[in-house]
Length: 149
Image 1 (cartoon, rainbow, N blue to C red):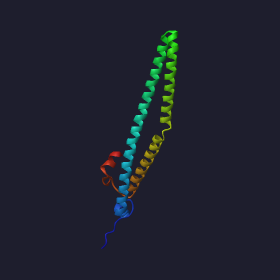
Image 2: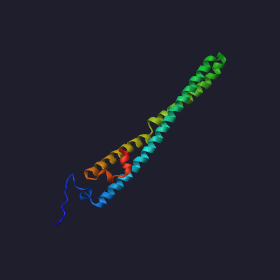
Image 3: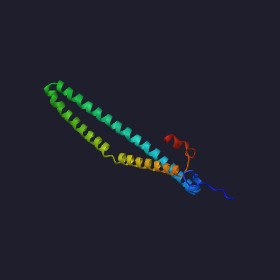
């Protein structure tokens, strides 16, 4: 007598997909998890660079304020000499601020990386949902996947 296996929500993963399909899904999931991890590392690195650039910008602004204060405290003749220096430093600061601002706000790398990370997260979530709908229980997921939830 043949063994009848139930179909539907209680059916096992093997009943719904072939072993090859299961392995392909698992390989895809593993690759996506690895890609996701790489993208997250890149995002953290870019965020650290962004924070450092903001700190550098604040340091430059502090230096300009300090130089302007020194300028006011000096005599009129010194003020004229330092005015050129302040103007030069202010110009450098504006250039640096403009460069940092452009780098931070229009960094294609940063926005592309965020977009890619979001797509990968959505894809991983979709694959997990598909695996669950296919009847794969949590024990079949890798330990790394369980930690990420």
